[in-house]
Length: 154
Length: 162
Picture (cartoon, chains in turn cyan, yellow):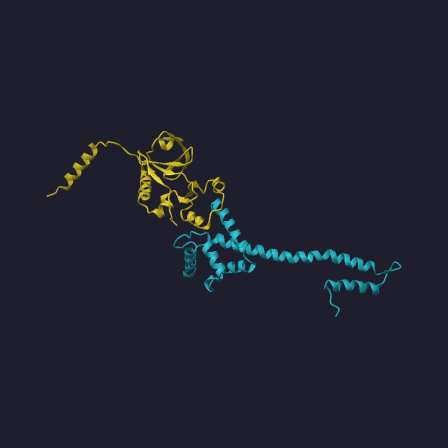
C-alpha cells in the first residue's frame, strides 16, 4: 500500500476510534469480522463501514462471502482496503484490552510494596523486650492480611 | 476460368519488386524519447518519470507535464487520452488531468502532485480522506493532486479500473 495512503488511513482511523467507547470498538470489530452475516449493524458500525469501506464495497464483500468466493477467484478486486481496516480495528481492540488488563495488574503491583511495609511494621510491633510474641505477632500479621483481603478469618 | 497458379506467381513477383517508402520498426523510438530535457514552446521540460508506454517531462514551475510515447506504437495512448478528455462530461473531467495536444501529436497535461511523490504529503498538509484513498485505489494509485488540492487520475488506462 502506498505510504501516503497508509499514513492517511491510520490517521483517519485513529481520529475516528478516538471518540468511541470500548464497547463500540468491540462491536465494530465483532461485526466486520464475524457477526455481519447474521446480525444487522448498529448505527456506529454503519457509520464506520460507510466511512472506511464504502457501502458498495461492503455489499460486494458480503456477497462474496455468501457465495463462497475466496480471494483467489473473486470476480473483481475490492477498492477499499478491507483486510487492512479489519486488522486495524482488531489491533485497536487488542490495545484497549491490554490497557484494561494493565490497569488491573498495576493496581495489584502497587499494593505489594504497601503490604510489605505493613507486614514489617506489624512484625516490628510484636516484640516485647526484644522477644517476638507469637500471639500478638500473629494477631498483628493477620490484621494486615485481612486488611489486604488475603485471608478471611470470619 | 480463374488461374490460381498464375495469380500466386504474379503476386509473388510483385511482392519481390515492391519497394516500401519507409520501413517502420515496431520498436522505433523518437529522439525525444531518449532525451533528459525537451524544449516545448521555448520552455525546458526535464525528465520526471516513465511508464510502459510513455515518458513524462515536467517544466521548471511544476505546472505542466509533456507525455512522449516510448515508441511509435504507443502514440495511440496519447490520442486516446486526449479524445477521452475532450469528450468527457464535466464530472469526469474533475477526476482527470487537464489534457491538450501539442502540434507534433504529443500531449501536455496539468502537473499533479502524485501520491507516490515523497513530498506530496507535506505539500498537501492534511491526510487523504477515505473517499480519496478509495479513488486512488480504483485508479491503481495513478493519481495526484492539482494545484487546488483536487485528486485526479493522470492515466486514462487506470482510471477507475478496479
